[in-house]
Length: 250
Image (cartoon, rainbow, N blue to C red):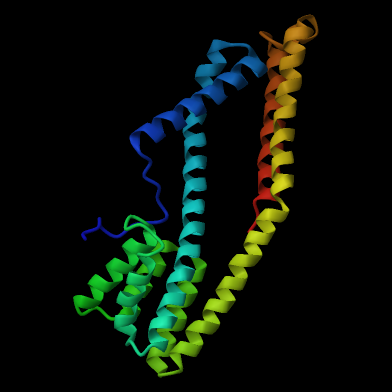
């Protein structure tokens, strides 16, 4: 089976429909801010360019999620490689055996399947295993894969007990990923609370806008009101990004 060219995991190519709906959501957010903070169509057009910033944030989020998924998939690949080496396969042939094992778990379009197929193809083209694995590690920019590539190259170059080294590396990486999962689970509730709290200020402004319009009227369509609402918007955005940074740590 032929795959596309090597993947750059630091870029995100959204499908046309997904990109469209992401831009629509960004435009909608700009419209909400323009209405709540300025009550002005001019403000909407001034804020509109920030929809591109929202799309950029979503792309970074998708890149991060893809790398996390790839790290978990690669852990299974390492276990299969260790099993193949333990069964007597050479380092080169262990990737072919691991590919067959992974095909029972993942579809052929999975990133790990594409990468192992690419490594096998490069080996068949007389590329060393270390170089093929290093290329994958550099493109993925995933710490676990980069660590494994370095350990694998060192073990093969020095003639060490590769099976034992790879198994120990698997245990270390598996422990690290398990710890990250436990952290994600433990702060899932706090992350949900943070998202709710981020909506509260907007809800308060909307409530006052609908039920105390006379109280909010001085905040719109005058220089003083625009300055106050702009400061409020900046404070809100700073608080939002701080809350996201707190609940999304590595």
